[in-house]
Length: 60
Image (tube, rainbow, N blue to C red; front, side):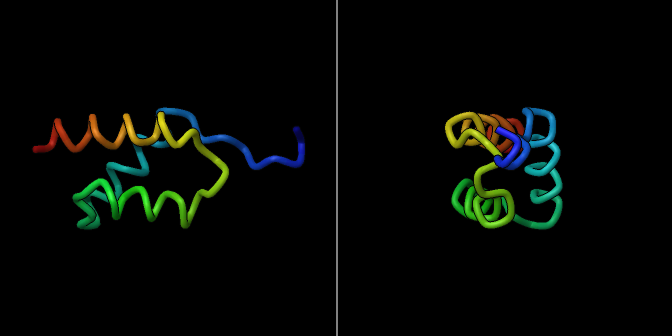
């Protein structure tokens, strides 16, 4: 377990997504791609997708 990267919690995922929205990313695909690129193995993909969908829906 100590060899695995630290997992991002919901609050950290939410903060990342909101900061990327402020940077101009505004669609599911690019946000998930950036998350995978920068934080591979540090999050649950299903939960991350739920968070991204929720934030995009509330900003729409």
